Image (cartoon, rainbow over all chains, first blue to last red):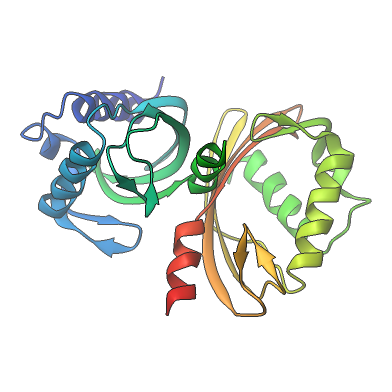
Amino acid sequence: MSHLKEIYEAYLACLNAQDWKLLPEYVSEQVVHNDRYLGISGYVEMLKGNYHDIPDLRFESKLIVSDGDFVAARLYFDCTPKGEFLNLAINGRKVKFSENVIYQFRDEMIVQIWSVVDKAAIEIQLLM
Amino acid sequence: MSHLKEIYEAYLACLNAQDWKLLPEYVSEQVVHNDRYLGISGYVEMLKGNYHDIPDLRFESKLIVSDGDFVAARLYFDCTPKGEFLNLAINGRKVKFSENVIYQFRDEMIVQIWSVVDKAAIEIQLLM
């Protein structure tokens, strides 16, 4: 396993532990998310918001692809958003969905994140 | 550049040329798309459907990550769906969006595709 894959798995464990004090070990102070500057404080706020909206949120990687300074992952979620999520009224239903996400590292820290959540997959479940 | 990256770029060129006869050079007869068996004939039907719905469709890679038998890419689209796309009424508006996609290769052929299109990004543009 490449070194960045190990670091990435430790980063996911940090998210799942909601250990925000440890996050600066993995995420650059200047982190950019989907081409928008967040900085680590903005990124932590976003993550805290995710956990507020989805108390049983858990990041699980199905596949990790590592190449030079880049890591790509397919993440899998099986969780219960309390109210709205992605502008969809989930209201405590259990939903399963994936996220394909690519990270750029510099000096073993995440500096850019490009994330796409499979909203269409959630919409189909809400119709059932 | 790794060999699979070169093959992947040739595959994208094949899509952009709509050269369906060449596609079996890149895609396995048994290809699976988002965990659903399509087979190459089903995959070609899907692609032809995409071009029917989006006549100016063009696949452009912003980032390609390659690792062993896997390729991950961030694709960028700037196009004009005629009617509905992803259950959204686009009706000839110009939209820009990304797709994060991961491919598994076997013997230099694509055998699995996990794709997520950024539907939320399109929805925002439709509100503007």
